[in-house]
Length: 133
Image 1 (cartoon, rainbow, N blue to C red):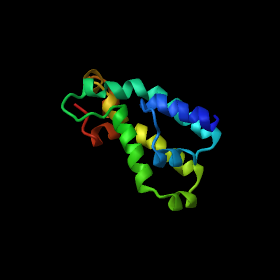
Image 2: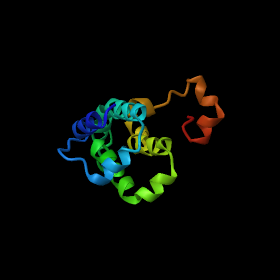
Image 3: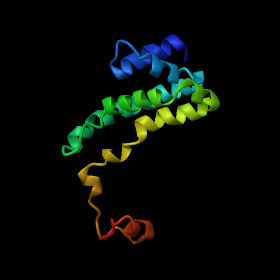
């Protein structure tokens, strides 16, 4: 993905006419393939992220805007000197984590109800997390 295409995609994704310099500096560390995968992941998660306030009405907004704020904070916290010591892969993981860190909030109430007759509830990890009936 070219730099101009990446900037256009990010502006559309984030709903921002201008991508802040610190965010742009962070994203430019990605290779062309990584930037394409990052944009694809963000687009795939966008609709789900924007529905989180619907499923979790007692939580603060953890939608796309929240992921964007996390990305902005990462860009502010990581000066270019530190980024130069890492790899494009490190930056890719950080940017993807900004979108994926609240992915568990997408589970709605229907999924959270466990049928006691479900044989998977006998597995130790089910008991460890307190889901078993």
